[in-house]
Image 1 (cartoon, helix red, strand yellow):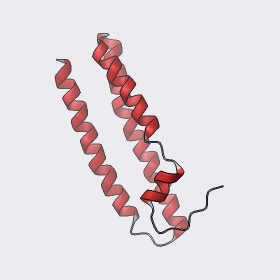
Image 2 (tube, rainbow, N blue to C red):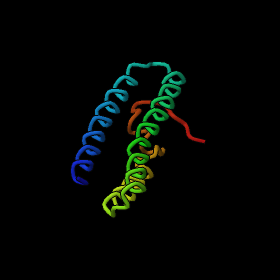
Image 3 (cartoon, one colour):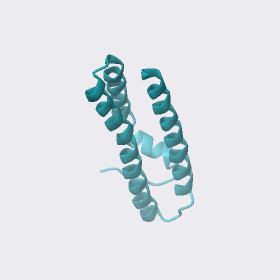
Length: 103
């Protein structure tokens, strides 16, 4: 059933969100700005990798079943992947009270 797989992907997204929040709260423990930014880069690499898993899964399901629901879901996931890619405003929001200078 397509809906069961859709619900399963939503559950995975929720779990990823919780892991992401925990990783972000762990970053707040660092006081060294350079060490913090290095950990933040590692955090985002892990987050981007984890965001690729549902996209790849949905793409595989679309190729295997050719159902339109997977195509639409894949399109939405790709849009959200671009929307949540780290930008200056998001970095400043997630790392408050830091003197971060962007080149």
